[in-house]
Image (tube, rainbow, N blue to C red; front, side):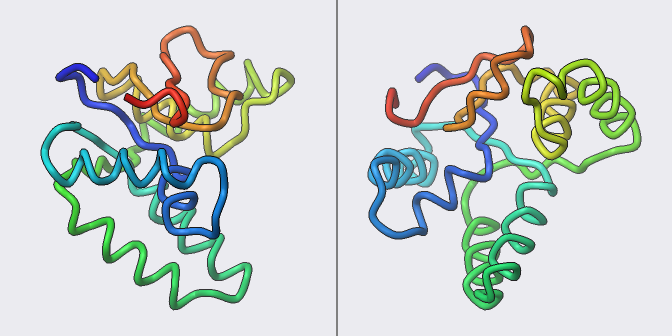
Length: 142
């Protein structure tokens, strides 16, 4: 990986914290490299909200709370989701929802664009409809 800051999608944390899965080991390596200072990473507040929502929805709220606390201990940048991000997310979603872009992913993409980030680590291919994002699959890491 380069010195460029990579935006970590929510699924990186979910696969790392979850049951055995083909993505689990790759996501654990990504987090270990971030913790060791080898990988510069960022998320936005929506990633944390998404984790809390998902774990609450599957009746594992305590796990979601603990995971978010652990994430906040990592040396990463936590970007706010601003009004400008939401305006851009709406426009991105409007333009690309028929191609599979999801609303939360539009928010991540907008935050990335407004913070001059282009590199994304994610298992989700729906980001590939956006020409300003370079998606790296966790299985291809490093």
